[in-house]
Length: 238
Ligand SMILES: *Cc1c(COP(=O)(O)O)cnc(C)c1O
Image (tube, rainbow, N blue to C red; front, side, top):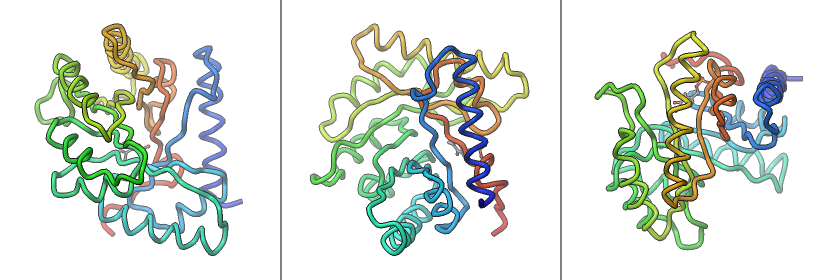
């Protein structure tokens, strides 16, 4: 077995265990393998181990990789289809490529970006699934919208024809304290409950990374975004 497939098994076990602790079914929790900074070969190793959903942060890197992975699949495992999720910061000149190549976007924080994604979504594809990124750190420099502005943006995104608003995403400040991890994610879960009470239909909480996925699952995460624990440490010098 390759290291990536061993790592994937371990992460799946961790999800099953955390779901048990949370008294939830592990089938409610989707594992998104975050493959940024890793190449098509690494993605294909994960595909061979049964992984079908991948998260990417950089548009051009992702578009090239998606094409390369599709070639590998055509040659070696025809019929497999993958779901690509965009999870990084979005520049407005990149929205067309995102709308064309991804099925989910987790990092929407501005109406203008949402409008472009909707307008540029190709008509032969289903609506683009959207999560709003919430800033729970209270630091202005962090990305994401403030909790108090979420309902308004949710309303506006809901009205766009080629988007489907699915839920909320958050990246809290890193901390080793499971209690602090949980209290950040709890805010997102409560925000989801509040919005659904107001009539929204949000079924997704994109919460949890390699270092805090247990806490996220305990607070109701439905998508965990895991990079390092699957692919190893990223090398940003390359
Ligand atoms: C890189 C990244 C991840 C994965 O983080 P790891 O700590 O490597 O698991 C998850 N979510 C987002 C938004 C990321 O940018």
